[in-house]
Each structure stands twice: as structure tokens, then as C-alpha cells.
Image 1 (cartoon, rainbow, N blue to C red):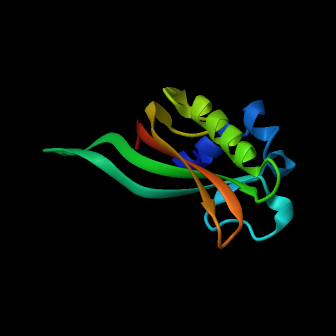
Image 2 (image 1 turned 90 degrees about the horizontal axis):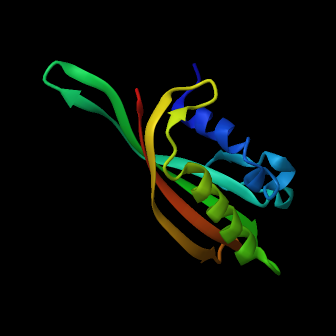
Image 3 (image 1 turned 180 degrees about the vertical axis):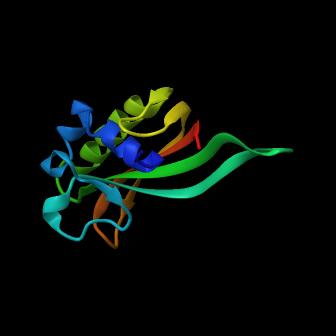
Length: 138
């Protein structure tokens, strides 16, 4: 069985609204941001929190995690709209998702809790961050 994040990435790679925008149709990976300009637009991810729900007898088998996805486009004409469009597509793919991930665990519920746009001046990237809470079979 694949991990939760591997299953989520596999799910995202089945969504045409995402693969039509990201570089090569597959530019999704963990932080840090890609270095090569040809890797953009891209989605990076990180998991700032992950914990199991506990009962008096131990783990309940339900995990709760937050994953932060960063939809990034190299600065230039249309870069803000590209990053934002990618963030909207990611939100549509994950918000309210319930089911088994490709080759992975069951997601009981996914909740998009925050979407923010920003510009990373040091890296010259337009970014839309999408924060998602997952309740899943751990």
C-alpha cells in the first residue's frame, strides 16, 4: 500500500484540470521548490502535522493531517492567474473528497481550510497555497 501523500499525488495526476497546467503533466513533488525553470508551473507539498486519533486502548485507526500545497508559476505575464487557476483546480479536486486513494488508504474526509495567494520575490514565483485537512485510515 502506498502512503497517504503518494495516494493523493496519484489522485491529483488523474485530474486533467491539474495535469493540463503543470509542467510535463507531472510536476508535483515535495518541498523544496524546483530549481529548473522548465519544472514550472508546479505543485509542491509539505505535511506540517500528522497525528493518530487515540482512545483509551490505543490508536483508533483514524489519522488527522494537514497538507500544505503550493501551486507555483515562474514570474512573468499571466503567472498570477496560472498559479491561481492551479490552486482552484486543486481545491476542486480535494475539497470534500471521500474514498480510497489510488493504491492507498481510505480518506474519510478532506477539507480545504485555506487558500491564499502571494508573490515570493526572492524566488520570483507567483504562488497559491492550498491548505487541506485529511481524516484518513491510518
